[in-house]
Image 1 (cartoon, one colour):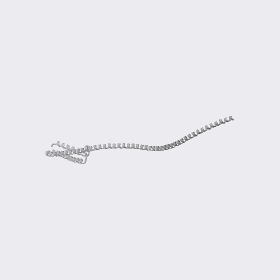
Image 2 (cartoon, rainbow, N blue to C red):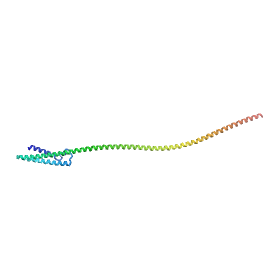
Image 3 (tube, rainbow, N blue to C red):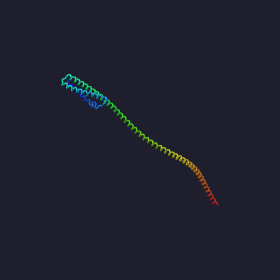
Image 4 (spheres, rainbow, N blue to C red):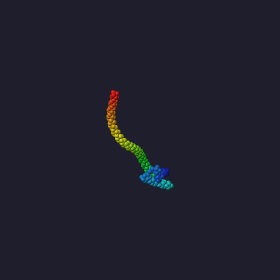
Amino acid sequence: MNVPFLQAAIILVSIVCSNAAPGGIGSECGLPENKDAEASKTKASSIAQKAAQEAKAAQEAQQVAGQQAAHQVKEQLAEKALEAAEAAEAALAGKQAVVEQLQNEVHEAEEVEREETNSLQQGQAFLNAAMQSAQESQAEVKLLTNALQVAQANAANAEQAASGAQQEIAEKEQLLEAAKNHEEALMKQLQSAKSDLSNTKKAAAKAACAAHEAKENAMRNRRKAKRNIKNV
């Protein structure tokens, strides 16, 4: 195991440690965190930090061993550094799994939010339609109420007019009856007057005849008297 590979492992561990800091990958992405995700993140961060410490200690020990030219110690320290790097990779994989889980949860939450938004919009549309229908029904009821009031007023006027017409008809019937009675009385008076006129004409004719006859008798008697005077 050479020094550049060990330094690369240390750099990888340092990157993992920086990602394991408070806030982590999920916080940097703005994703929601739950208790399980927080526990996994804490565990992964602890493993990464421990691996970083071991890698750093291995580097420091390797430097000391290099100064002492102990090849075997370098190999052992390199193996520890490799194991620390592998642990860091495992911690990184764990954090990636947590991030993927959180991303899936966020996706599901977004789906639920879209469904709830659509449901809310549909409910609002239904409410608006119901309110419009209620307003139209109220306007129709108001219109029918006004029409009913007008019809009732017309019916009252018609009833009053019918009552007045009935009273007028009764009065006219009384006047007609009185006119009929008056006509009958006049007819009787006319018949009586005609009969009286006929009797009067007859009496006048008799009187005229009697007067004419009396006049004729008087003239005859006057002429007779004149003749008698002449004869004397």
